[in-house]
Amino acid sequence: MSDPNKIFSEKLRAIRKGKDFSQDKLAELTKIDRSYIGRIDRGEVNITLEMLFKIAVALECDPGEMLPSLKQILH
Picture 1 (cartoon, helix red, strand yellow):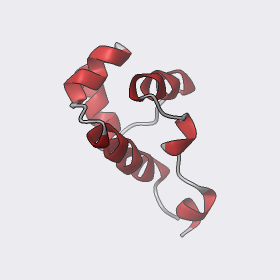
Picture 2: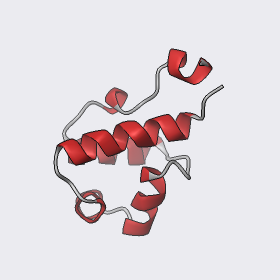
Picture 3: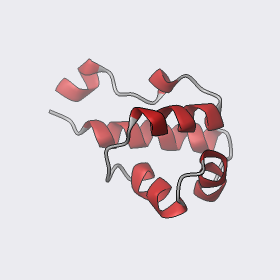
């Protein structure tokens, strides 16, 4: 079974970098501490739905784009 946090963080990082956002910029837009954004970006923490939606709004993407699929987790 794959770690869903790692898969989430890889997707988040890809979207963030694709929009040319630094961790600092994402932290500023979401009002989430920069060090915590770094931990999210590395897949070290579980985040709340509230944080997921704050990040999605800041990145202007659907929250589901960052979530791992069941197939990804099971393989």
